[in-house]
Image (cartoon, rainbow, N blue to C red):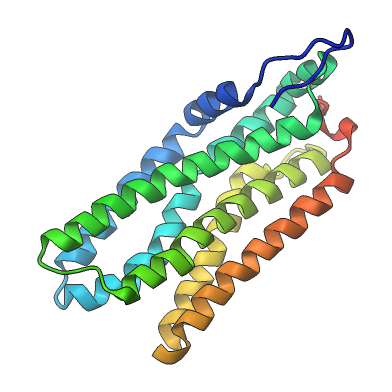
Length: 238
């Protein structure tokens, strides 16, 4: 997103640069998320009673790994803040809000890469093994997998960014980057556990309700960030 210098000139958008740097910064998490999700997808397709297991489990597992693979945006933001890069950009007229939004957009792109790759391989393999995509599987993906992927990814990124800007580094404490994966995978894991234990008739209420609930929570965090993250919060703590 563009900003303006003190002279009134419009700065070029930093979004494409942020996306490219986010891919580089989070490449390890991105590769791990894709590889592990594909391995588990193959395992689900090859299990006995594979169709029933795949339909029940595959849509619930995708957000776990998509969230893990989407940490590059937050890693980039935290690293740039600690190194003074954000402070430098702000001094040249880039709006702090644009830096935050670019981080979240990078998170969305990275999570989409993992989710899209997993869905394409998983559904293609499912069809190739002689099954057809049922309305149950379709509803699970549209009503839970896709919204929960973005909700949990943005939840982890938003919490990590806000935490990093509000905290002061101290010896012996882990950084937000180290804890963010736990924040991101917690929602899908919680839903996975609950969904497996409820009656089938309540399945969509649990999954759909959870996805909607975390989307609302992310929206609340974004609203709160406008108050918590003043311009000074983007400056290097060093």
